[in-house]
Image 1: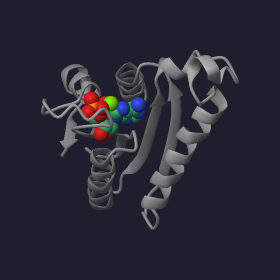
Image 2 (image 1 turned 180 degrees about the vertical axis):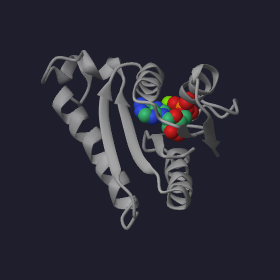
Image 3 (image 1 turned 30 degrees about the vertical axis):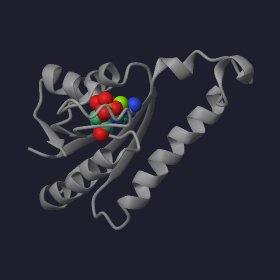
Length: 143
Ligand SMILES: Nc1ncnc2c1ncn2[C@@H]1O[C@H](COP(=O)(O)OP(=O)(O)O)[C@@H](O)[C@H]1O
Ligand SMILES: [Mg+2]
């Protein structure tokens, strides 16, 4: 039922809540937890070192930030008794998360309700809305 849990994170409080929730579930059900972060294409197309035009970050820095985020997630799962995996991917976050969730046969996705964009008006963010709408497996949305 919860053998393989996929937890998408973006560094937001809501995503860390989702990770905590996944940990509790996973300890009960002996689950493997896979934490995924997807770097959106906005960053992926930026040429190296063209900061005058594209801002401070180049693709290697963005990748390193993504990797650090996943390392932080692993730290937060310190002592977790079952296997932990991490995935750093590039593309549309909701498309990549859904594709991987279906292809690799995850049992459930545990996701934050809100993310970093901080548009307070809606109950769900754009990524979580897409996941809830299009996932063919159960989704746990954590506030
Ligand atoms: N780039 C991403 N990679 C992985 N997970 C993400 C990403 N962006 C958002 N998420 C997940 O989706 C949840 C909701 O975020 P999102 O829908 O982007 O809300 P908002 O529109 O407020 O930014 C986050 O808590 C996180 O679990
Ligand atoms: Mg967002």
